[in-house]
Length: 497
Image 1 (tube, rainbow, N blue to C red):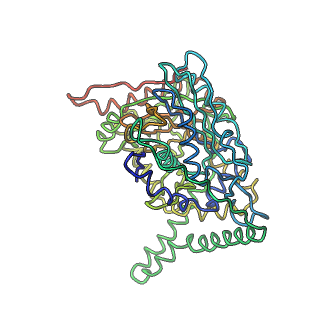
Image 2: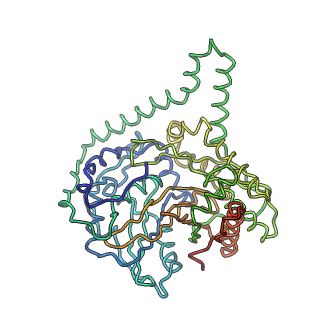
Image 3: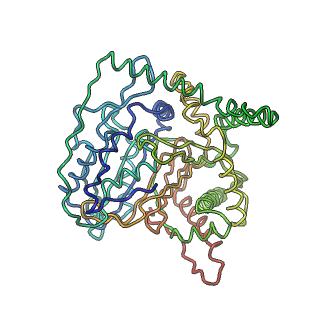
């Protein structure tokens, strides 16, 4: 369910006390794997978001709001602790020396203070590794933005939550009006419980046993549950078991290196770019292909990458994609991730945008139905028991030959305010996770805000890539502009170099 911002008549969110119960004490196995494979820094899982504000927020109100949120959301005051002898997954422990001033900073953007300059500030912040002895988030308020505006650079580790959860958490800091009525008294800081060594070992062992039991039950569940129907349909039962095994093999299969050299190198350098498109235009494009916004989004990105390859004098027939598939359900924990990464190849040689949306949309939907995706944490539990270097090498072989990650997250559905400043736009810059490019769509009211993260070693001409992606969106949007009543609106880059 899409979150809602604070309003002045909600009693300071009566359900605020419920949030603490939605953050488990230990990482899920998939989060533990994500944490461990950062032994290879190319596989870091840092999420960065940039919110553009219409004015500079009141600093004291801003600090109060962040402080209040950190008292309601335990993860904001917790650090990661690795269990003794790797018994169980890493656990979250309160940082007894938590210092808000470390996590919240204030800087001034260089002139002329446009979005490009803000993104140039955000890039090194995103590239810097987290201090693993502290909670895994940093907020930087940027003043001096042109027109009297400001920006907020938000950096957090993916193990805290996924994109959908991050939007819901952001709602806690936002208001539905610029100057709401006074809120209730500041909540007390969370009580810090310091477990004894025996308690820590017992908790880790319980966590290990719990996931072992769950995994040993869940992995064969599809086959075992269908065994009940074997008498009625023995052939179908065998086929179901076979399909599950095949699906798991597909999900975990390494990818060989592509033959062509475009988007080939991998480095630690990251560059941010943005594009804006009216949501109604993407929706019309998807509708023209009897599909969805996500179909139009995927087809536009693939067309953009094809055009970039052509500018490098390379014809490409297929591209390799990672697409996060949300597994989040109502009532799930806010903490941790509830998605499975689907990795698949798509044709990159379809000229007609309608056919491209239909073909690529069907491929994505087929992968969303892969049975093994539901077993992500159980499979991750098994992988997490391997030596870290082995797991890191395995995931490197799975992820470093991906051309692009594409992710689509519902953002703010209405106008919101942060300490008196309106959030005008918000862009998400998701981790490349070994890929050459990540393209993230974060909706903001009626606009699709596209954040593009480029591995600067893989992309030799960023301007060409961004323009190619804009042209890809323009190609797809044109499919929805064929009716006589539709007025074509060209996608535009808002953070050009």
